[in-house]
Length: 451
Image 1 (tube, rainbow, N blue to C red):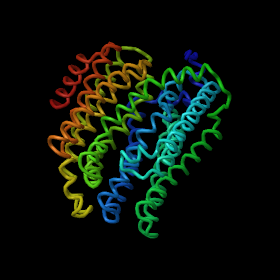
Image 2: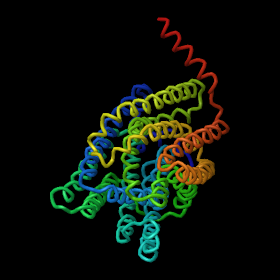
Image 3: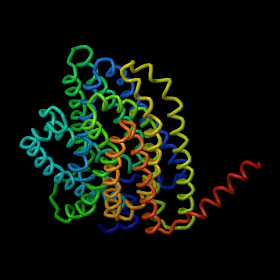
Image 4: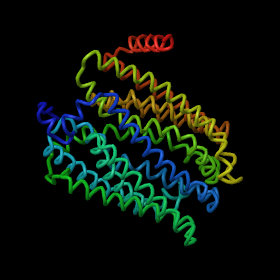
C-alpha cells in the first residue's frame, strides 16, 4: 500500500503526537507492564480452572477439552487469514478513512472463508471426527467460534497499535473472567459434565466476539465498501502467512494429535497439564512482544543507526530474560502439582521442556518482526513450513521411540530450528549492528558492575 505523508500518520488511528514524543523505553515498558498484568490475570483464571477440571473430568475428558482447543487453533489462521497482522502493518501506512475500508474488506473475506469451512464441517465432519476421536457435532461450532475470535483479534490489534494498552487489557481480562465463569458453572453447579463445559466455553467466546464487532463499528473502524484493491492487498499479505501460522500449529499443537494416535486421550490430558504450566513463560514473551511491536516498527522505519543499535541491544537482553523465565517456571512448578490430584502427577516431567520451548519461541518472535515489517511474509512461510514439516517428523519419531516425553524434546528442537532460521533471514533483510550491539552492551554491563 502507498505510504501516507507524515501528517496523515499523525492524524490517523495512531493517536496524538504526544505519544510519539514520549521516551521510547519508558512508554514501551509501561505498556509492557499493563500487558503483563493482563496476561498474568488471563493465565491465572484458566490456572484456577485447571484444578477444578482435573477433579471433575477424567484424563480422557480433559483430553477432549484440549482437542477442542487444538482444532480451534488450527482453524483460526485459515478463517482470519491473519487479518490482525495485516491491519497492524497498514495502521502506520493508511489514514483513518482508508484503514476503515481496509478493515471492512478483511472481514468480508473472513466471512466468505467461514461459510466455506462451515459447509465443509457439515459435509466432511464425520471422517474428521473419527480420525481425531472427537465429537462430530462440535466441529461446526468451532468454526463459528473461530470467526468470532478473528473479529476480536482485529479489534485488539487496533487497540495495540493505538497504544491503548489499558483498553486492551480490560477487555481481555473481562473475557477471561466470563470464560472462567461460563465454563465452571455448568460443570460444577449444574452437573453438565464435558458437554456443559464446552457449551459455556464457546458461548463466552462468541459473546465477546459480538462485543468486538460492536466496538469496531462504533469507533468507525469499519467502512463497509467493497474494494478489490484492498482485498488483493490483504490477500497478498495475509495468505502467505496462513502456512506460517499452520506450521506454527504443527510445532506447537500437533503433538496432542500424535499423542492421541500413539497412546490415548488420557495421555493427551496429562501432557496438557504439564504443558499449561510450562507455557507460563508465554506470560512475559507475549506481553513484551505486544508492547514492542509498535515501537519496533516506528524505530525501524526511521532507519537511523542509534535506533537500530537500541533495537539490537534490547533483543539481546530479551533473550537472556526468556531463558531466565524458563528456569524460574521450572523451579516453581513442583509446588503447584498437589493442586491437580494424583491422576495428573505424571505431568511434571514435561514442564521444563515446554518452558524452554516457549522461551525460544519468544526469541523467535523478535526476529520474525523484521519479516513482518518488510512485508516479506512469504519468507516466513517458507521457513515455518519447512520447520513445521520437520517438527512433525521429529514429534512422530520421538513419541514413537521415547513415549509422551518425546513431545517435549521435539518442542524444544522445533523452536530452536525456527529461531535460528528466522534470525538468518532477518539478518539478510536488514543490516543490523548485531556484533556492535553485543560488544557495546557487554561494555555497558561491565561499566555498571565497576561502578
